[in-house]
Image 1 (spheres, rainbow, N blue to C red):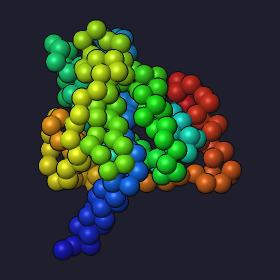
Image 2 (image 1 turned 45 degrees about the vertical axis):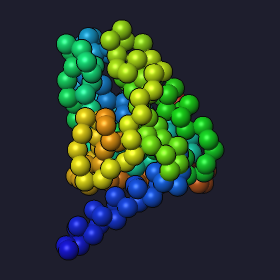
Image 3 (image 1 turned 135 degrees about the horizontal axis):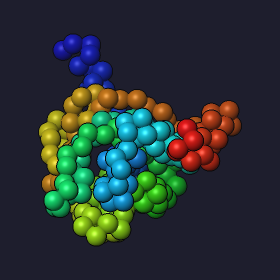
Length: 200
């Protein structure tokens, strides 16, 4: 086994351990366009700024965050459906506060996402609708069980850790930010989180 393979396995092991031991979820701020995907398309630069804002809000709230590469069907089950590759975040409630689901739902709605995925510690993930789009999938606050995290396969709603897919069944480039523990670590995320993404 190559050293890079060991590192990839290690990254997946950490992700698996986090989903087993703590509440977890996935979210992104990437979006093709506002207004249920029908408005003027966002540029790549705008999506990067949107994700920077989302990351700051997650870190300022005290969550562990890992950057992952996601693949998702946006506007699922509509004539505007499109598969999009997007930079996503695996978010873990390392401090076991119990409010991650609500936080992800609020942020999913703020960033006009079709859905987020949330899973309680050691349990299967659930796709939860977070926008009011008429044809949005799975529909506002509707919940669709996704199965457990399966590593090394691919599927409709999936993410990648170090380039290897992990899937919430039936349904990474790995950068770990961890939990900000000290005021000096929080200063940057808190200041960035207070700004509108357009000002970043």
